[in-house]
Image 1: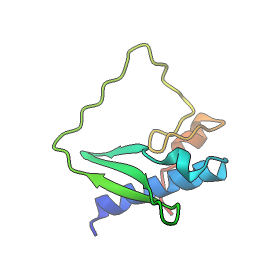
Image 2: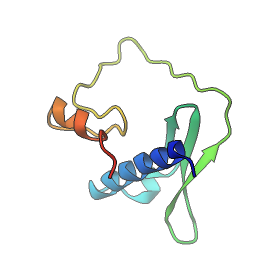
Image 3: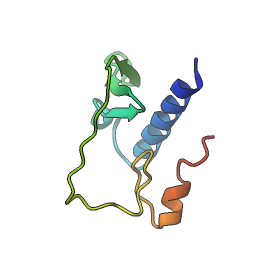
Length: 98
């Protein structure tokens, strides 16, 4: 397993844990898509046990368009998207992987 894949899966797992701790269900997180470099991954709900699986989708290139009028959230982690009470906390959120 290469480092890039491990990092992307760790980020996704951290994001999932934080969302579940904040009260969201695994069913509501299913079909969430993640982009890491040129890799596209999606959370898929396993119907047998209700767990979430990370499925990598084959794509050649990723292009992200942002609307210019979209506000730039200052207190949101740019890796996992979690909101924080301060800009510093948002910067430190995914700075170090456990």
